[in-house]
Image (cartoon, rainbow, N blue to C red):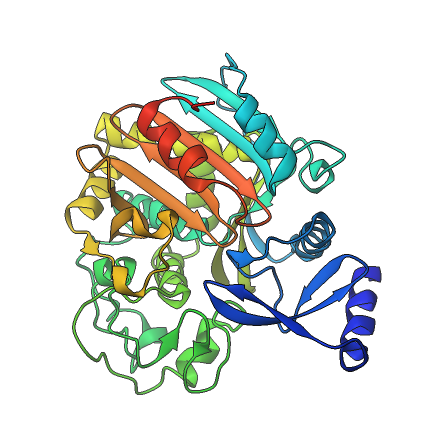
Amino acid sequence: MQWFSVISLITLSFAMIGCNTVTSYGRPVDVVHVDGVTYYTGKWNIPQYVKPDPSYETLLYYGLKVKSGERRTSKYSVSPSSTPRPLVFDLNNSPALVNEMETSSILSYLYYDSGVVRYRERSPEDRFGKLLRENETYHSNSMGKSLVSYVVGHAICEGYIDGLDSTLSDWPLMSDTIYADQKLIDLLNMAGRDSHVVDDTKGMKATGRWYNTTPLKDLAANELKGTQPKGPKVWHYNGLLTNVAMNYAIYKSGGEFENLLYRIFNQKVGVANEVYFNKLSYDEGWYQFHATPEDYLRIAIAIMEDWQNNTCVGKYLKELDARRIQVDQRRRPNLPEFKIPRSYGGQFYLNYKGMSDRDVLGLSGYGSQNILIDMDKSRIVVLNTIHTNFDWKKFVFDVIRDGEIID
């Protein structure tokens, strides 16, 4: 409660202190500076790619703030496996990575290559180590969208859903809405023809309500009621589509959803700690996922093995790749993390410039949470962070491409 009391006091004193601005993606953001902390007016978290870079005090404040609201009792939880997937460590030393951990907001970094973890670093205890201790989960942000898709693939392979060309016409909740007769593949591809209904930063266009805090049944009865698809099938990124896809899988599994998650994450992946999706309401899911960095790696290894072994879920992932759509680069910030992946398929980033001859799947979330998986070279990077003030290209893209960190 102390953090929220501080926030209230700061808010009340804005007028007395006075505001100035910083920039995020080149656009101005109002801020207030108090005792070394920059408060971003009206923002729950630090805006991405904000300039100038946040101070240590600002990063720590927002890191603690987000962590304080992270754990919920309302969740779809999976218990740890009694036989967790083992991880083999043969660690290399990288002065460049150590320096990055000591100067940026990276909390945890893992690099896996052909069965072995080659780099493993955590933020020092006197920096941000207190925000992500050993065996402690961390939020996925939009990486959870890709994990929803992975769950949908299992729901298809276990017969709960007929396939990617299934429509939502058999789901009463979505009747008389824009999504009722659309194919699952189009929802997963962010091609729901819904740009007139929802925006990824402003929420529901009619009311401004945020889809990650409002149950779908409420949206279906209000903002979505009577809506129709409009325009061509082009990429229009928004989290509402992911929540619709996730809750369709919950509906189709007929009360077996938690058992489905158990079979995926406990039995197949072999997580060593609890993992969970948050809920929107007692019977509705949200794509926000929580796992330790090591369990994110275990999940990524399972995804890679599905692809390489051509399992049913692996064939699902390959179909997503085959049916991918082009990312609208004109609407993307001119930054490597956004410009290098040129396609999107089933909630995964694909077709990475410079590695277009290799099968690389990307998971990306707010604040630059990242998992990058190279199916051909058996390489994986898992990176958790508070903010985007690190060299994404060097520590995520280049290491996957080259197989090492170039110091």
